[in-house]
Image (cartoon, rainbow, N blue to C red; front, side):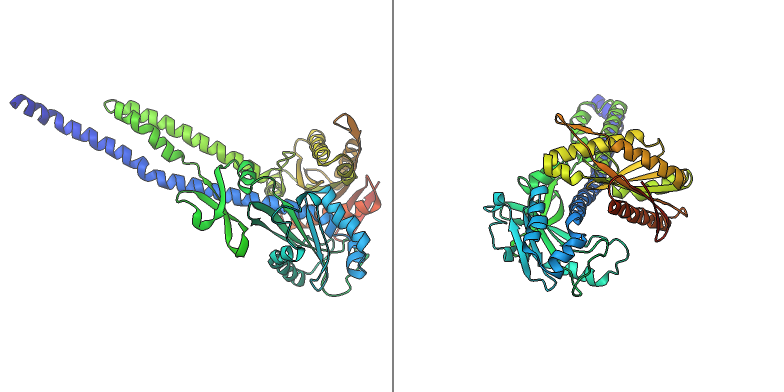
Length: 469
């Protein structure tokens, strides 16, 4: 009995110290777990929300091919032409894009045209009267009107469009209101307001499947905010019947919690080898953090790069300018494909997507190592060219135009498109000067498009351009 007491006196303090160390080591990750997992969840929510906004922006930009157009002002606002509107707006949008409902409001917000694709007439959202759909879009139209009054257009107008995701039963659509505007000012509005295009794009499958698969989310679900279980990440994405908010929720990654759960049984079996257990926990921590960093890098790449071509998108153009400005002077070029819409109309969207991939591949191959190519949306691209004068950039763009004009093999056939270029030099290495140069290159591109296919237009100064065949 005395021996046992003496052994306890000798070993007891050591055992208590080991127990305190083990409890302390267990408490550190336990209390740090919530903070690490909360930060991971907040980052993923921000990335998902940004990705959804980029997808909607791409859809709004694609609609400019129909809304920023002098002839649309002539045929819809100046003197409404039903046949022209149906052929060039309604049937064209439904036939060549994913749009399945089109409505046009006149300058007084009265419905003057609507069309619904036959294949969606029985879906809950589209089977309703057009006026009911327009009522859903009322807030979007109001925002368009406010922006129309506030803006002071100069040069080629910027798109004026607002969108929202709406859910009716199991049916989800992207609803967009866009302002018709003249591009080259050969037509002018009769009154102070322009017509408005209201369009709806159905989201394939269920909304949770569409967004969950697109952004690699675990157990994605869509429903009212009140139904979201504690611990799930969420972002507000849509409006439902009666105006209540619909949110996308999912199970966020929990690397710290997973690490803790994995380490508990191991700690119980190797308490007498504390150092070995600590090393093992450190290795697991590194693996978990590496997995988290890789997941974040993938999400960040998806937010800053075009999913079809892999090229950087609009969100990277300013950071890339700041990086390249350290190399030397920068010339910016904007290019647009000539005849791309005809390829989509004749061979379908799959062929059009494949054509864009091949165009991006040629641009990557034939641009210089220091050049950076971006896809701005639709069939429009941009190139930042450091350490090159406008004359050299002009020569490079003529070479690129010849290269892009060569036929593209697609599904056993060869298709050909042209390309138009607008070029401008960044006069001062500041963000403001770069934005002015980008705008000047875009205006020069519109000048090239107005002259026909395969033209290069160089912007020499604000309001002054030079055409190169």
